[in-house]
Image (cartoon, rainbow, N blue to C red; front, side, top):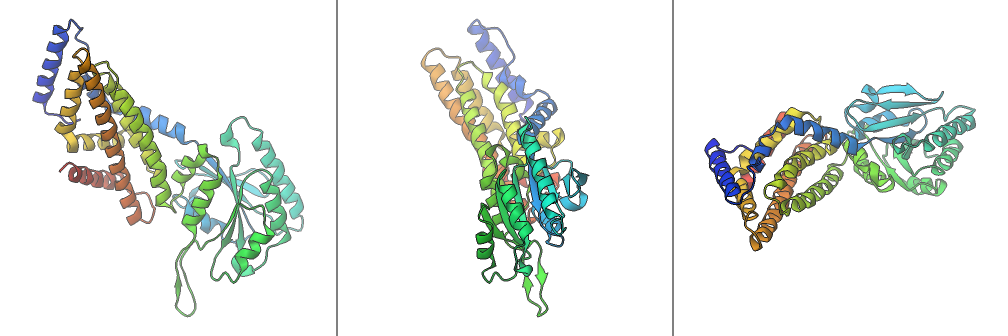
Length: 393
């Protein structure tokens, strides 16, 4: 935190005097801990955030021309289908990944072939093999079966594929290039009864001959339907990879804040003077790292350190003063120790919650303005500083 040097000295002197009066060793105070090298703390927070994130694998199947690549690029970060690295895994299936995105797309083709039954059997063997892996990050967690609305027909190959996939994972039917339903969604639901949901989508705006413009639709609903059916431990990775629903990012980020605030309150309640700071600083840096990763921001120690410095500069003396007061109370035997712990616990939890919620509000605002695309780190820091300043008034 950005605290005036004189403030450091006065507080440090007071603490050391109390330690001496109580016969305690002059051990490093929480202020010394806050001075620790933020870059090291930030780097560790990044490693933890990426470890917690994991990777999710989504299989996307459909005939040629159904619009899979357009759908992938509309839902996921960074023109995923265009810029990701493709790796063949069977004659008709390839795995697409992109550095920095916690997602692998399994793109399945070949349903038009006369030998589509062999294609489906080959794919099912692959899925079974992956499901036997001890690492759950190697499993395929959900499937989107894409069907073109203009065709107004569900082919035998699509029906058989949906049955094969549903034996191993949740399947969502995706009606692409949606223009006019005319009962087709109900038909798909009837012919593909094993699907968990059927969602009509239009991945990009389309201008009709008469000049009418059809805007993108259904993408957020597709994300939400997928979140509901994938394993809970992989939801954070999926939410981070997608850009279609800022609300899903906000919801996942709030879970991170709640966990961090609970841990902060527990650390603040510790009866050992100044011990809570050793936990609070890395905990709050870790919270900011995990929220950043959920919103798909590139993580760096410099960026996280700047965020922490921004929050300290805006909230400054009030927070530090309250924290010092509660920690000094812990040095008083008996009731003082209990009271000090209670104040510190409430303060630590409240500060952590406020910090997290302001950061989420910052990212929601920026991502909404940019239609879900990741902003530059300078934009994030600037907006975060502004919100922190307004909150401290």
